[in-house]
Image 1 (cartoon, helix red, strand yellow):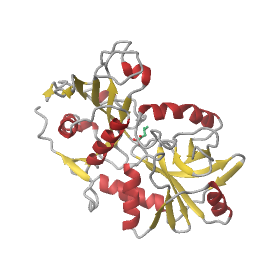
Image 2: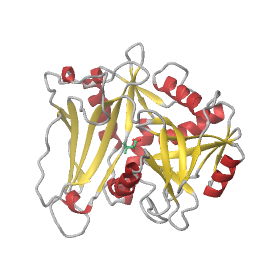
Image 3: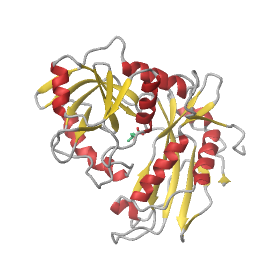
Image 4: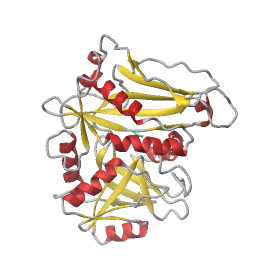
Length: 354
Ligand code: COI
């Protein structure tokens, strides 16, 4: 791997007390190009513009996939990556579905550790801080025929973050537009999935909602996801989240929450949740909590769910599962409690040759 350190840092220009999600980038980036049937040598260099001709394929047909993952700093100053192997596997699952050549594990892992080692100062200590890492691969060949590219670029960029949404989410049940269909790309992180979600989300935001809850494409009767997150509800003392399928993204936070909840003795069901079940549980006072999970948000409370004119307000729970799950997840990520599942990996500061 070729490494060209920046030699100075832009970190002093960033106000870590007023971080907006995703607008600041750390000093370095990784870039690796696939050409003539194989991936070339990865390079880490200062964060900078990339050259692109107007005929570059990703601009026309959206052949692109991405990941979202996070690194955290412990109180002792160690850098911990959370479930890196799972993000690596999911990136390649997405790549396969979009006809992008899979990225070799050594390029992904070595590059990831080097960049974090170089940019470790960008990860601040404290429960609310993390470095959001964005690996992505896009079609970088030139051709405007609607066809698979023969050249791709893999990159990793990093952005310091705190919380994604301020406060609880107020969500609208979407019954017109659809995020994902059977046989489609909903279970992978294809860039186009997100582009297609913007318009319905914008309409909901104009009505004062923070996000939408996607429902199934056929009948708009079953809950699928909450915006870019997996959705969870608590009925009585049971947690329920839709089971994984073609139309649900296999969230790594979702999987972590399934396991943590079980560790905490909470009953978890992965199964379909219908709007009728949701309404009935709310009417009977049995709908205790709803929340979303995702890498960017961790665990976020849903304050209300609206169906047409009917706003279902969620109670404030004393013993909130969402709060306890978030606290445990955050404590594991920051190395404060035992990581019994082996989810965290320490980044050695010595790997970078600087
Ligand atoms: C994540 O949680 O990493 C996501 O994929 C959301 C992202 C679109 C910001």
